[in-house]
Amino acid sequence: MNYKHGEIHTRLYNVWSMMKQRIFNPKASGYKNYGGRGITICNEWLEFIPFRDWSLDNGYAEGLQIHRENNGNYEPDSCRWVTRTENLRHTRKTITMEIANEIRDLYKTGLYTQQELADKYNMDQQSISLIINNKIWKREN
Image 1 (cartoon, rainbow, N blue to C red):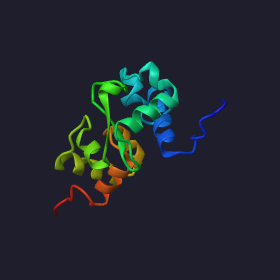
Image 2: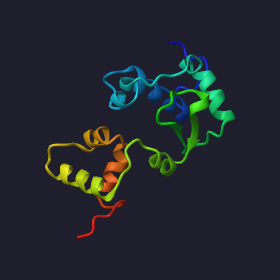
Image 3: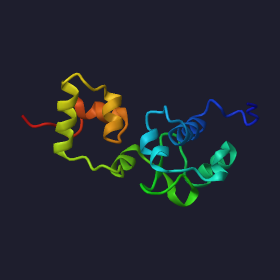
Image 4: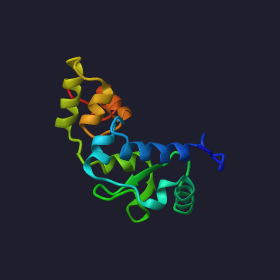
């Protein structure tokens, strides 16, 4: 491929690339929750430059994450840029203390990696780590 835009090593390019992986690559860890359940990317965003231009015109800043409405596709009308905390509030599965404890208990069995739990609960691995280490949803003993 010929990357004339020179932005292949930028964070925004990585966000775009990972979005495409979740939709099109059955081997990607998040595929089952995205492409595997029928979520698509609009034709315009199949190319990086239109996605970059939309992002810069719609609030993209370093540290923000793309938020897609849960049942929407990756397209301008269904997406916006939000903080990680705000994005976690909008996961399909609401995390409760019961679910946080379930995650901890499953991890303690040694049968699941953090990434496998992240996939199972439709969360990112960092959030699973925070739950397991009682940084969020602290288990009361």
